[in-house]
Image (cartoon, rainbow, N blue to C red; front, side, top):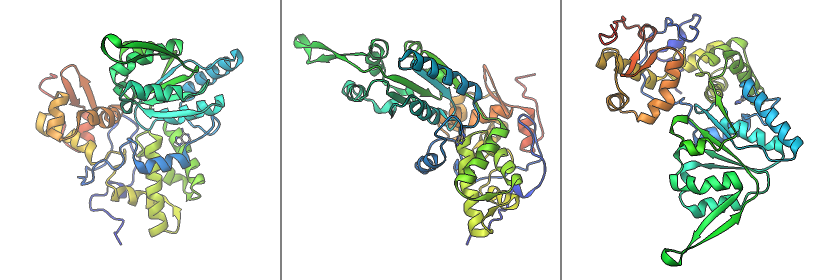
Length: 368
Ligand code: ADE
């Protein structure tokens, strides 16, 4: 059996981790694993999400303002006896866009149909989806910024007037046909608000940003998930997992599951602080939740580009990471920690970023 200890385990070292933006005493470790804990949804998460996903507002922890706003929208619409307006959620992966949408449908007492934007390839696909909805149903379109623009054009009248204008046949024989649709609610979700076309964006009645969670909320989520998974967890272990969770429930739950495995195989079935730190060390996740991929981004900017600024394309080529992965996965958290900054000329590593990697800080010559 594999040993829990890792040669470069930053988690075997004790100490109070820094709050966002401050450097701490973690020594860098050089990972071999590719993003095991990126917040992007995996097949494994789908089962995990189904088990742990809160199904009511009462069990949903965090995002208080968004929750309150939506509760009011729902209550007002119910009083008027109307479906709720189309809603748009934006924010990083794993922050609750899908979960909240499921709760909305449950609160409305309607069904939810979940689909990814790029999957709707033909107008016929859109027609099939829309005509199969019932009055008041929720259509959840994930990654709606990646929807085909032609499909978008057909969607506009469906959103505004609940009509679909289909073109039958080709050339001079072509005819249009108007299909009446049930009054449904579109919930669009995107990680990239800026990539959404203005006409689509304007058709949502309300837009909500989902932010990183507060540490206390992540701790509550971990406690709740441990209860659901029927595993005992020490309060200190909760704190350690929360600190490494990238302020993201999906990552917290995934880490919890891995630590549970280790606790059940190598420990006594209780998640202790010690088992947690050993597991995280084994996974090469440092005290602030950075993985090898995050460290590679920071190190590349420092070592190959003298701390930056470096443009996205160049950084992508130098790290062999896709531009989208840098934008959606690495950058938001590294910026949240204050380790990198975006300037008009590209990305730079900040002093605290250098300190985290224990590399002596050299102010970029371009910033002097
Ligand atoms: N599991 C994942 N996200 C959650 C949340 N916001 N509240 C409670 N449990 C969760």
